Length: 106
Image (tube, rainbow, N blue to C red; front, side):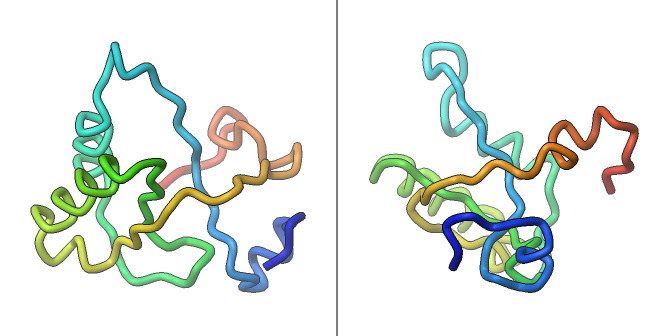
């Protein structure tokens, strides 16, 4: 995989996934609460790497919590990849704040 992916390379199935990075304050919200919101608003389905459902963890504790929520999700959990966090690359400027630009999100 490239260390400088572009939208075109991701669309070309270079192995990268379009994702959001969430930074949070654990004194305000727990990791488990974040995952609860993930499952409340997300219905995983089979997809190519660009659009796959995934949870990337930063610690063994996060991994254990994520594994439990995937099991609790039942069959939906089969379509969620679980892996250690990897480097995250910002999208090009024209893809930043895409939702705010009036683009539809399904």
